[in-house]
Length: 99
Image (cartoon, rainbow, N blue to C red; front, side):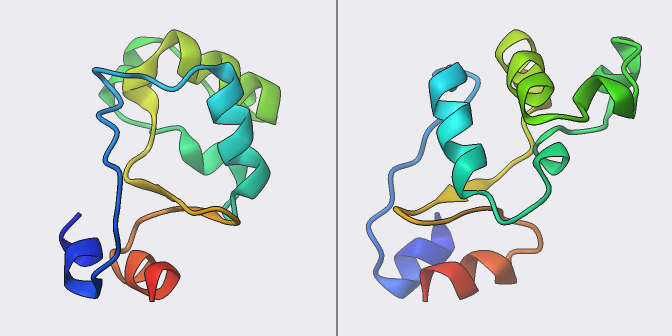
């Protein structure tokens, strides 16, 4: 958000835990995504707790299903414009996209 403010870009912040994206929204993001679709899924303690492997998040359909069921696994931030979506890590990627 800070980068958008610095650049004077209007941004809508979606709190993904409070308002998780549905399957259609995730599919729309994936269609614009510059990054590998598998990068949308966090491989963290929750991933390990669920006993997941890379094979569980290998396709766009699997990623959508997984993120609908386990919203906590959504990598963030995800920055979406009309034409492009990126995972905003490192932060310079956000600046480059919004500039």
